[in-house]
Image (cartoon, rainbow, N blue to C red; front, side, top):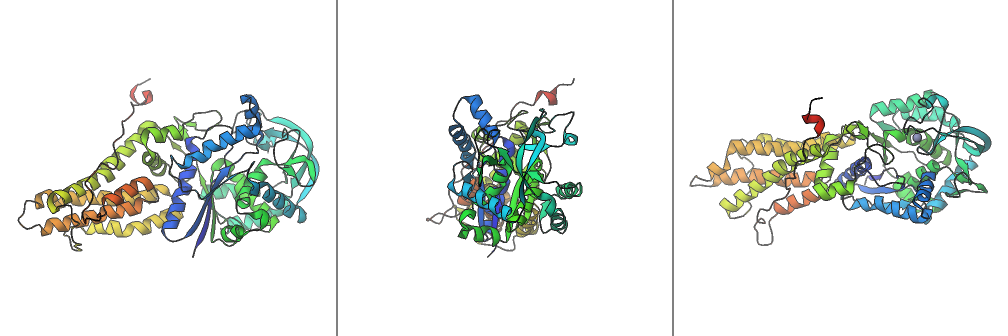
Length: 508
Ligand SMILES: [Zn+2]
């Protein structure tokens, strides 16, 4: 049986979650639900990155203790499972979970035993927002390219990881697809980073600079482990790496697929640093690195620090979980950025969820109740004119499988949408409401049978994408113990369309 481990990145908890992170969670959830539905063993792993200096600074600014601050911040992220309907199997919090610190220590010792860790004096420019050093050439007019802030000069003795030793191996593994990076533009970016030369990187901070927060370096209590080493390590520590437990062999080294989902801004850490650490520690490598773009609102990056921010809790409360998931899956191109507006989310939900899936199921169930007493019509494989609809139903599973293999959620949802589209087309050709006027209802029953089967297929096909709506559709299309279908009820309500954004109505 195929075994698949799927991870999201673990976010810093210094600010509330935003819609951009919800994108990553929903994508991971779809993959997890889909792979479970085809019989795979799946573990969907998420967590929170709590050992960052950012958290310490934010706690100080808020005037609360760091652990208290971090726990509250982590809860805001782990709480997303409900409003987004996530099927997360496990969450790891890096400051409090006992599996984590012991695992990070083991990972450190494994690399040290390979001779890949050494101490040296270092001077560099550090962006706390990114938690990384920048070379002067990487800055934009002396500022962090991501945060626009001036990085802090740091001079201290640190531990370094011998990344340079792994450049050739990494190039070969990414080049031949052993580590598959999607989309290709990100794979090429990773190869270019390697070709630009990989220098050893600092993997510890002085305990003073870290304000005493973080995981002490084993055998060197004056230093704490670099927060990215610690965060990347969570993919293993959550599997009881510290104890070399059964989860590690089942979900990591023995798994068929190890899939990391991440945003384009953290490619270097996942495609270069992490595989090198794994090579050093003698652990299996990720099989897939699936990179998504950023969401923008009116062209500005949505992020926790600066820029626009959109609260996924508020969005789900206002428009419903199904509408939020559907927008993220339908309008974000694979690996690329997308611009969010509330109006687009509402319009998409109304057009496809309410008017599309919802209306279709409601009409079919209503006709079955009105003309066939609510009884499921006998299967009629030869309903005239239903071939295109039956093809759309038959082809959908393969189309969805291929699309999700390429992390293309738009193309995957499109295969489901095509079934609804064909069903509506078939209904307007077959005109069941006219067939109902005939003395003999054979043709009517055949048409409604074809339509009901399409609705049942939609319920099944939608399940990984919109688990809540899919469950309602399936319930509506399944006979109850009395043999009758449930009375038709609205499944996917229309949502109010917000007023057009001023940009779209006014001319300058
Ligand atoms: Zn930065």
